[in-house]
Amino acid sequence: MTLLFRYLAKEIFFATLLVLAALLALFALFDLIRELNDVGKGSYSLARMLVFVLLSVPSNLYAIFPVAGLIGAIFAVARLSVQSELTVMRTSGLSIAKLSAFTVLIGMGFAIVIFIFGEFVAPVSEEAARRLRLQATSSVVAQEFRSGFWVKDDLSFINIQNVLPDNTLLILRIYEFDRSYRLVSISDAREASYAGQSRWLLKDVEKTHFEGTNARVQKLNESYWNSVLTPEILSALKVQPEQMSIGNLVAYIDHLRDNRQKSTRYEVALWFKALRPLAVVVMMLLAIPLAIQNNRATGVGGRMVLGILIGIGFYFLSQMFSHLTLLNEWPAAISALTPTLVFLAVAGAMLAWKEFPGRLRRRLI
Image 1 (cartoon, one colour):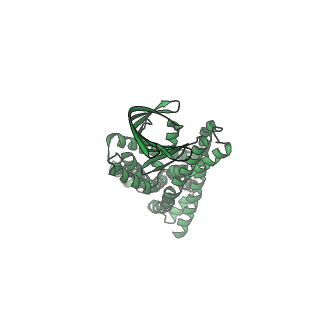
Image 2 (spheres, one colour; image 1 turned 90 degrees about the vertical axis):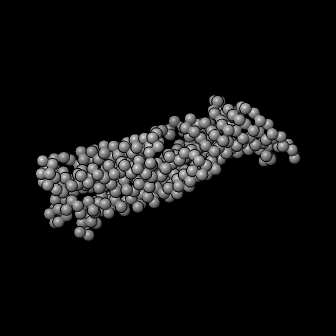
Image 3 (cartoon, rainbow, N blue to C red; image 1 turned 45 degrees about the vertical axis):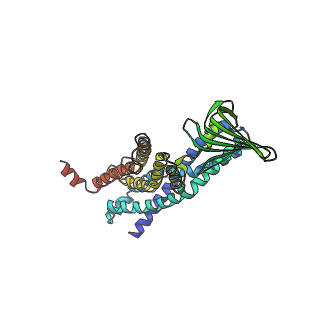
C-alpha cells in the first residue's frame, strides 16, 4: 500500500495546488479591483498597490485552504474514479476505509503546513501590507501594542486604550511636542468621538501644560482636537482578531482579562484559528464519498461544483456560530468546534454508506 499512498498523495497534492492557485488568483483579482479606487491617494501608486495585493496573498491562502483541500481532493479522487484507476485500486484490496485513512494522513501533512503558515507567515505579511497601505495613503505612523494603539501624528504621539465598533475612542492620552521635540502638553480624555473635518470631540479632558519648569493643569468637560486621524485610518490600524497569531491572541486575551474587559471575540478567533488544521483534515475526508460515485455519468466538474457549494456552506456555518457566540456569550471552544464536528459526522455517515450500503439499507428498512 506504500506505492498506492505515494500515488494518491501526489495526485491530491498537485490537484490541491492547482485549485489553490486558481482561488488565489481570483481573490487577488478582487483585491486589485477594490484597491484601484485608492490609487493616486497620497503616495499610493500602482506599484505599491501590487505589492499590497501580493502581501495579502498569505492571508487569503490561510483563509481558503480548507475549501481548496476539499475541491482538490474531490478533483483528484473523482478523476481516478472516472478513469477507472480507483476501481483497479479497490480490486487490488484498497477499501474505502483505507482510502479515507490515506486521505487523512495527507490532510494532516497539509494541516501542519497551514498551521505553521498561519502562525508565522500570514500575520507578518498582513501587518506589512497594512503598514504599507497606511503609510502610502496618509501621514500617520501607528502600531498596536498590549497597552493599546500608539499613533504618531506630526509632532504629537497618541495612546488609545480601546476603539469601539462605531470608532469611538476610549481612554486616550495625547503627548504634544514643539519643533525642538520638547514636551508641551499632555491631554487625558475619557472618550473621543469623530466630529467631522478632521476634528475629534474629547470628553472629560484633563490637560497639563508645561511652561519652563512649571506645570499648569486645566480641566474641561469638552474640547476639540484636530488630527489627521480619521475613522477610515482607524479601521486600517486595527488588526482583526482573525489575522492575529495564536500566541498574540493568547497574550491579548490575558491582557483583556487582567483589565476586566470582554475578550469573547478574541477567544472565538483563537479557537477557530486553533481548529483550522482539523477543518482541513475533515474537509479532505469529506471529499472521498463526494468523489466516489457509482454512476460514472456524473462528471468531475459537477462534483467540484458540489464541493464548492459545501465549502461555502462550511464557511457560512462557521460565521453563523461565530456571530451567535458573540451575541449569546456561548463558550468559544464549543462554537468553533461545532461546524467541524457537524461536517465530520456527515463525512462519517457518507463513508459508512459507501462502505456498507447493503447493511445500512437493511437496518434503515
